[in-house]
Structure formats: structure tokens, C-alpha cells
Length: 249
Image (cartoon, rainbow, N blue to C red; front, side, top):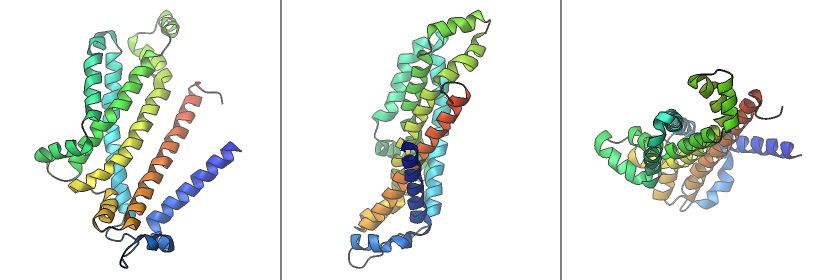
């Protein structure tokens, strides 16, 4: 029953997202009461599918860069050679979440100009902390008895890392990636304030024109994308962990 309900929710969320992107005019009767002075309830200044793709591009590029650095950093500080750098690395990762995205954008604009680059910098910094912390936690939770068994089998450091530690830490690493992705899907909307193409354009247009229908359209698309992507990543996580024996089939 739970599985049926979950699948039904996924289908409904996907159907609503597709309608919002490709047939928003179907929602005119619902959105029209949210406008004033006869304004259009449907955002038509730009292609919604194009804005969604640009939004996702910002997310995947920033998460990819953050993921590579954060996972490598997490591996480094959990090795004997890098253990002394854990407090510093943690402070750097935390700094990315300490600065508001708007402040990062303002600082980045002075060197990179307007567009996608300052937005990517802000998203990159925001995604570091959850991925780094989950990588460290995942690697540190590997039982000492398992590591001793790997050493007893004659594995060297690299073999133990890739065959034992990373597979066991994988669920927590993926969880960090999921959290960072959802955070960045919402945070990326502010990129439109510095001329980065994305769904924030719809929300900002609604705020400027006092058009609640636009705000609702942009907000729903972003929210549904976050829910569906998180759910998809969770399904991938379960599939991977089953294949490597961390979950029962």
C-alpha cells in the first residue's frame, strides 16, 4: 500500500510538473484569480522548459564540482597523512554556508561580472558542507574490525579504500549529495538577480509585477523538481546499495 501511494504521488507530481512546463495554459482558471488588473496569469516572457533546463544545468555543474572536491577532501582528511587538516577543512566547508548566497553573488560579480558564473560560485560553496561532512562521517563509521579484516587479507591502502571503505560509506555520501542538490535547486533561483538564466526569472517577474500567479508557477516548478530529483536520487541510492550488498534484495 505504501509503495502504491508513493508511486501515485510520483506520477501526480510528474504530471503537474509537465503541465506547468509545457501546458501552463491549462491552469489559467486556477491562476487567473491570483492576478490583478487583468494581467496574464501565465508567464510567457521566456520558455519555461528552457528556463528549467538552464536551472538544472546550474545545479548539476555546481554539484558535480562540489561533489568531486568534497569527496576527495573527505578522503584526504580521514587518511593518517591528512588527519591534521580536518579542523581546517571543516572550517572552510562551513564558511560556504556561513556567507549568505546574496553576499557571495555580490562579491563574485566584481570579478566575474553578471551571468551564470557568480551563481555557480555561490552554489558550489553552498554544496560543499553537506557532501564533505557526510563523506567524513561515512568513512569514519566503518568498523575497525572490518578494516582489520581488510588488512588481514593483504589489501593495501588504495584497495582497502575502494573495495571496503567507500562502498560502506556510499549511502551517507549519496545522502550528502541529495541534501546539497535540494538546497541548490532552491538557492539557484537567486541567480536570476545577476542575469543567470533560470526559474528565478519567473518568481522575480511575479514580485516586480505584483503577480502572484507567476510566483506560484515558478515556486511550484522549483519545488516539484526538488521533490522528484531527490526521490530519483533516493531510488538510485537504494539500487546501488542493494547491488553492493548493503541492503537486502
